[in-house]
Structure formats: C-alpha cells, structure tokens
Length: 128
Image (cartoon, rainbow, N blue to C red; front, side, top):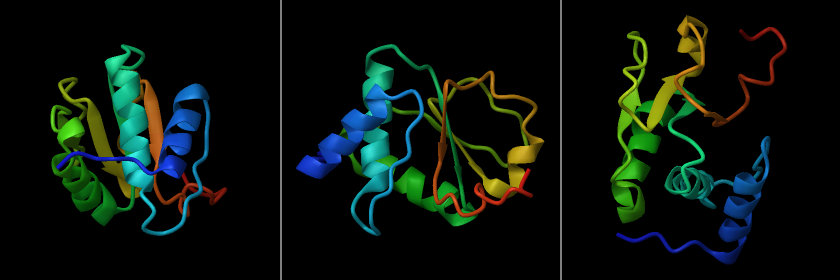
C-alpha cells in the first residue's frame, strides 16, 4: 500500500526534515509515525543520515513501528532491528528500543537521528 500524506502530514514531515531538533505534537491516530517515517525516508534518500534510533514504549517499539514500516511500500526497503540486549549490529536503518533499555546503550555513534515516541518517560527529570 502506498502512503499518501495529508496536507498537515506533509507540513509535519517538512518541519522535521528542515530542523535539527524538532518536536511533533499531533493528535491520537493522525499519523505521527507515518510523518516521522516520511521524514526519515527523505533524510535517508538524500544521504543525510545512515541510521535512526527510535525510543518508544515496549509495545510501540516491538509492534507499532515494525508494522508501520511493513505496511507502506515507501518504507519496506528499510532494515529494522529491535534492540533487546545485544549492541546494534550496524546493519539496520532503523533501530528500535524501549525506554527501559536505553541506559544499556554504550553510545549513539551507530545512529544520526534519535526519535522519542510517546515522550512521557523522557520528560521525567529522574529518568536515565
């Protein structure tokens, strides 16, 4: 299935691509993952990034992101790796990890972009 972005999603994608740091606040079910994947796709295609790390709640990291990538034709070429304990292989485009495992990463040199999905845990000043 081909993804056709709505006009507001195009604006979101373009905003993410054009800013070094950005925060996308979009309502439930309005396509935040599709917007973000579209932005990452553009950055990959333009040679601006080699890999991205997505930090998300467990179910979102293990189910939502892989399903969205597999669902849309534009993203099926992206290699996905769910980080469950082993270090990143260096062979994926998108690495997925849940918030509880982030502190086990030894660095971020394997990726160029970090995406925080559902930032509730990330905004806690006591979080690692």
